[in-house]
Length: 601
Image (tube, rainbow, N blue to C red; front, side, top):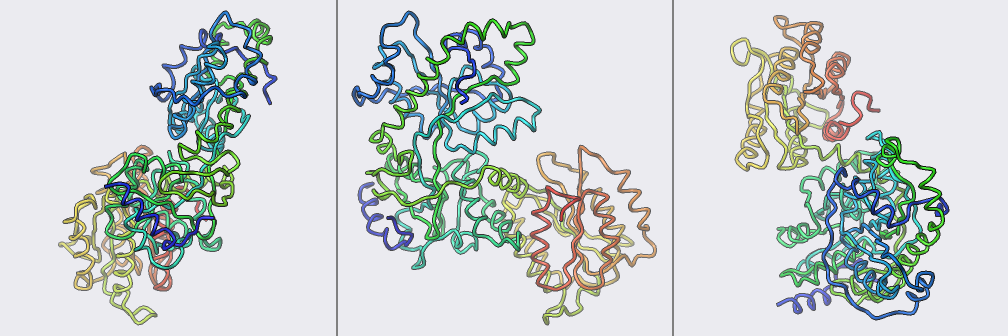
């Protein structure tokens, strides 16, 4: 069994561097009939399905193929087209199986394997279409639940999908460059070390990568059930950089200044190393266990919304069923035979970096051990979908105006010996580190009469954090805050001005919001009242351009009741940090609870 200890893999890394210098009884249209009648569905699909042009990998005629297709061996008048959508990770393998499968059947079938991301095929099905597809091989059964979830959101009826077999598997691993293995330290790598941030982590976009989503589920499984901020904070940190592909993640890890791991699979490690990269990668197995992705063979059993619409337009469903029923069993047998052919191609699967469908089999590929490691099934699909929703919220790119109270009371001592402004400076530095370079952030300070009778003062414009000069400016502003402190608290005028300012250059591709931190309550008798503020915010309300206000009250003197009323009127939220240690936690809450406002619990 493979070890999670980095030093066990050092010799392997040296070798790598050297080597690189039933519902089956339901009536269905036959393949040929669906090819003729449903070709027109393809153009309306949400995503484009591109044909995979790969040479067939010949591995000989094997007895089980002949036996599996005996019903069709007596000759054929028409060639049956069979179209299978497959995740790109397994499409080349299925193409090789298809070549021998068709030949053994006497060319009575023409099996086409289309390489299509599982996410794209799921989007197609969720739209209510299935094109001319007969079967689908995604990289996880969880995609079927995601199809139903997406279809429900779209108000569509997805095609009926049925898993009839499983054909291959691959465990989720932590990959690092061969050159960095020895620098990971003596402690075994674990999901816990990733959760705590001890080890830098890269995660290809879990919207498309099943391995990434499975990895997030593992992180959640080892996080504190009592403190959801722990998992949210980990996702925020990991989400700062989201590679668009596993290959990009491997390249970024190799270039990283500190040892970095990528959440991926054995198969992805093997595929990457096959291309002889300048910096090969090694699979490391978490010491606290891992999970495996199992590839299902999915038959398209029933039609979705688009086919229903076609029937309503004049298709004689009863006649079609009567004509098709005689050949339904043959169609099912053909797909079943193909699934069995794939499952039985153990050597072919191993050559591509896959374990067999049961998680076993020996691999002889670069970067992974020959013997299979023990792996559990992935988390329940419902859990994964909920994690994906949280991830989508946490990684939404922000356009944020941070407004900081610099009234005289911010120099008062907190109960940990520091001044209130000192505590804020520490928490601000930690919070700033959680934003990606794609976020935009600006800073205002407020007290009273800072510029004439104006209670607020712009200190840094709202600009991308990808600009090092802008980040340096913000850090300088935070460092200078103790010198900015004087006066009373002009809270209400400042909130109204901040919302108006964010609306001026509204970016619909981002979450536009105001984050205001104060240790007190409104003390500006010459400014607007609470009622006037709420009325003005109501007048500014625009559902197409929401600007939620997030208010954090720091210390014992804040007016949380008024803050809550203001926040809820904008779709925001109010938080209370009564002790210094709470400030960092509520900053994480402010970022992580965007999806549930104003009803967060």
